[in-house]
Amino acid sequence: MNIIEQIKYKFTIRDAIDRIGLHTQTQRGRLVANCPFHAGDNTPSLIIYEEQHRFFCFGCHASGDQVDMMARFWGCDTRQAVKELARELGVSQGKRDPEAERQAREKLEENRRRLEQRERLEATFTHEFLLLAAVERACYGAFFNYQRNHDDPEAIRQFEAAVNLIGDVVPMLDQMHYGPERLAAMTAAQRWWGR
Ligand SMILES: [Zn+2]
View 1 (cartoon, helix red, strand yellow):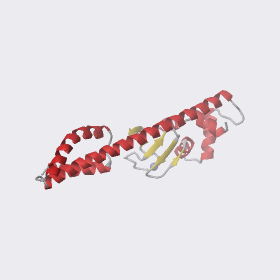
View 2 (view 1 turned 90 degrees about the vertical axis):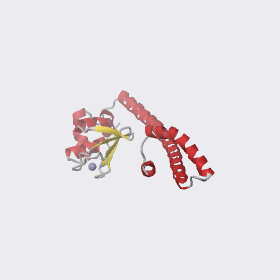
View 3 (view 1 turned 60 degrees about the vertical axis):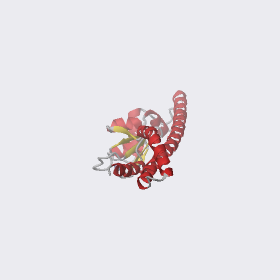
View 4 (view 1 turned 30 degrees about the vertical axis):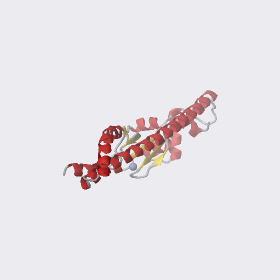
């Protein structure tokens, strides 16, 4: 392991977050914080990818790994941050530690596995959410259609099916999250019910 690998092994992005004193929260499955690198960030713009040890700010576009985070915090360049962290962590070049290297490799492998698992889960989740949201939109569509054509037997049939379905779909979607498309469909439906 070179000196930077040793630092990253001993000092994770979580350590950098704690060191800076960032207050993190989870929003829609993502770890976020108010960005300390630009002023007035009241809605959390800083996304932290803990497993990859990366961060990215949607406000000021600050990005990088845990060393870059400390460099920004200290107001120095990456090279100086490496030097400072190496000093603090007692890391030096040329001192090989086979056990630490083996652990570091295992940790990287474990991170990779967890990341793959999460990506698979997210893909499944998104797929199911989109399916359910489509069913919900179709139900609202049937309600609208019935409003305009309440003498049409097909509209009545679809309305009755939608009334039965919506009670199953809505609680499932409530447990997931509110996408913009779903909010638009619900707002339109509420206007309709309010008539
Ligand atoms: Zn920022």
